[in-house]
Length: 606
Image: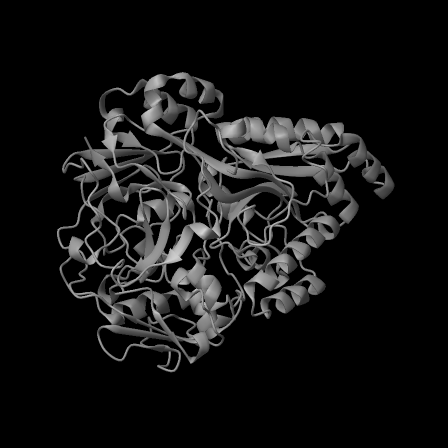
């Protein structure tokens, strides 16, 4: 939920998520989904694109039944036919919608996967949560503990078979299986238990013929799905918009192998997939646009290839020759060293954007290995935020971060405990003094980073800064295709590593608990610093119990600042922006403010 590098957006086991007041939901409370991997943040560049902040809560609303009705509004001038090329740096880590949480794969799944609800984005970037498979955004009862969804008529899988409530139930129940670890887990946790406790309700998923009781998840007929949550959740329409709350046909569920051949409910389906190399999506003849308020099927196919560093994709988009005229990238950013060239080349103005993303880049500190808080504070003071941002692209990549929470969060305050605004290059002398005080001058730091062109440059400036502050740095380069998995292992052998996070909606319960709750420590989860402080966990529970989101908001900020000042499981580096460029023969390219990527659902070949 992951980058302009990789696009992370993942938030895996989000334990207890706040009970957002219904009034807040109606006002629109959503921002993005989790991790991110490249540049992107906030601010505006007058020469590089619209730059208006589309991640604020006021930009989001709950749509009506009419808003949920297809077909999607036609794109002026759109044509049918042709092939859209997609140049991606990193191979997709998942195609299985149950495992998807990063921005690049979130963008990709929109083409073949439909969820109960989803996001309808207009030409001004305003977002409505609407029914996708469902007729609307859901109906609540029992004080928000019970939610009912009705499926639309005419929904079909790629083989023409009807999509029914039992297929949605199967899609949800398979999330309980032990191999489904990487996607968002709001719904199963709300149904059956916090952390990984929910898995006890259905340890093998539905594969041994067992199902959740109807008192938990009910499908009384082919059109109806009813959730019975343990607590009220007014933000359910947002949680059911996650890609894993959709339909999976039992006969086509190949468990782990489903990652290579998900069965389509959207306008495209998997044609050919060469893992780690390329993916071709072709038209799904059984998708009915009359049921879909979001997607189009203009292009004949999408040909996605991996291994394109930012410099490669930027160079090709700038040259704008041959098939590259018909190409884009879901998440590759403009290469930092080519920023000025792109901005000065007049013909790129109509085919680029710079947009604020709901991501924050961090350097996480492994508290299992770095047990002395003074050492972690020294790292925080030493970290050269400004230089790291510069290597990611400078102003078009983001702005220096001063605390853990994005400015898009409700209740955000611009606190700055480590003086990053005034000292973007870090404070090496203050860091060295802390190391001396701790008796740790010369402390060795194992620094893990992805072997991308950008992160290799970042590694140089980080290493130099830490050495100036009195640290000894051992650099550990990791394949970008496995980096996210490597840093999410609890027993990893690294001291510091880059991570990124974006809130699923602009309430900090989608940031603080997943990143800092000690009960969320597990392989694949997002407590990257392994912070395990019972006092913090207790405070998370206290704030989660506040029923008024407005009253809870400043409490989340206070807690986040306390964690940053006292526990220091990492240091925020910059708030992200996405600087994208594409070929001149494509139309309908726009920004998806929820995913922080290019939105491919309206793209056509001119």
